[in-house]
Amino acid sequence: MSSEFLVRIPLERIAVLIGPKGSVKKKIEELTECTLKIDSNSGDVIILAEEELENPVSLWKARDMIKAIGRGFSPHNAYKINDSGSGFDLIQLRDYVGTSLNSLREVKSRLIGQKGRTRNTIEQMAGVNISVFGNTVGLVGEFRKLQFVREGIIRLINGAKHSTVYKYIEERMRELKGDKEKLWVSHAKEEDLVGITDLDELERLVFEEEEQETSDE
Image 1: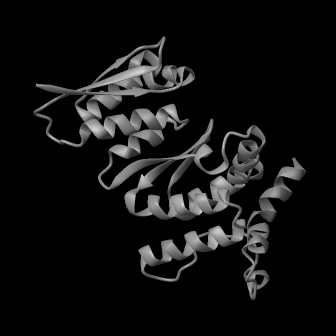
Image 2: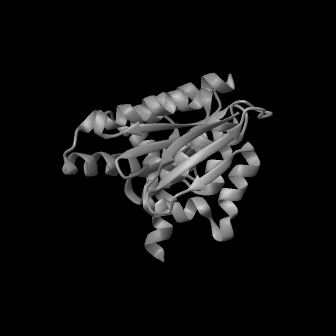
C-alpha cells in the first residue's frame, strides 16, 4: 500500500522543480525513493511513497524539498534538507504584519537589507540558508539552528535592532560551538575593533572594504 501527499507551489517555480530535462525532479525522487507527479497547470505536486520505504521520513523530506524550491530556494540548497539532522521551516509574514502591502515591503526590506546584507550576515553567522519570497521567509539548515534563526528573524519583523539580533544569533552559535571564538571574519584592522560594543558599528567596519571596492568599480 502506498502513501501520498499533496503540495502546491507557485506556478513560476514549477520549471525549477522539474529542472533541465527533468533533472531536479529525478534527483528528489532518487534521494527520497518517492515518485513525483507534477501538474504544470495548477502547481499541484503529488508525492507517492511505497509503504516499504527504507527511510520512513523520506516522504516528509520530499515534501519539504518541494516546498523549499517553491519558496525560492535553489535545488542545490533544497537538497540539503535530505541530510540527517537538517530540515525546512517557513515563516508567514502576514501572521506578524497583516495584509498591508506597505508593511510587507518594509519588513522584507529589513530582512534582506541593502544589497542582501542582512540576509547574508545571518546566513554566514548561523550556516542557515534564507529565502525571502513572496510573503514568506524560508529557512534551510540544521534543526538545532533553525529554532534560534527563526526567533531572530521574528525579532527583526517585530522591530528589533539588527545589532541586537546579530548578537542573539552569535550567542546561540557560541553555545552550540561550546567556545567564545568570533563567528564572523572582518577585513578591518584588529585595533579598529577594540572597545566596540555596538554591532551596527561593527557591521559597518566588517563591510566597509566591500563597499569601497564597489564604489571604485
